[in-house]
Image (cartoon, rainbow, N blue to C red):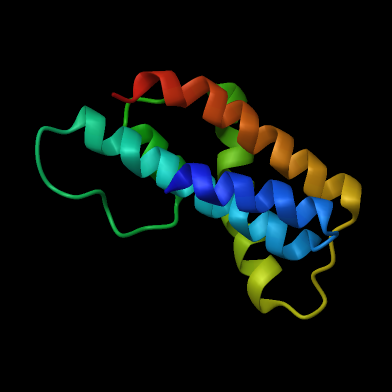
Amino acid sequence: MAVNDLAAAEALVGEELFSAAVFHCHLAAEKLLKALWMETHAQGAPPRTHNLARLAAESDFEEPEWDAFLDDLPDQAVASRYTPRAAYSGQEAAEYLQKTRELWDLLRPRLS
């Protein structure tokens, strides 16, 4: 569930595990957008993709101010998980967490 990944990201920032926190921000955003996709489609399953911009567009969430974040976060999820040199400062991880919380606050009310 998206709420669990958001909580995990918050806890990981608190534990100074910044790369893992960024990864969980992506998981939370992806699950949230897939839930929104399910709300906007009568049947079927959401696409098997990590592309947040695609999920947003297919879920009728087209707000240009979110484009950069939705394009960037999947790249960070890959880097945070698989690139040994990916290191995030506490400030960077906190910024990703804050944007993910804002996305949650914006989209959660649209879900039943």
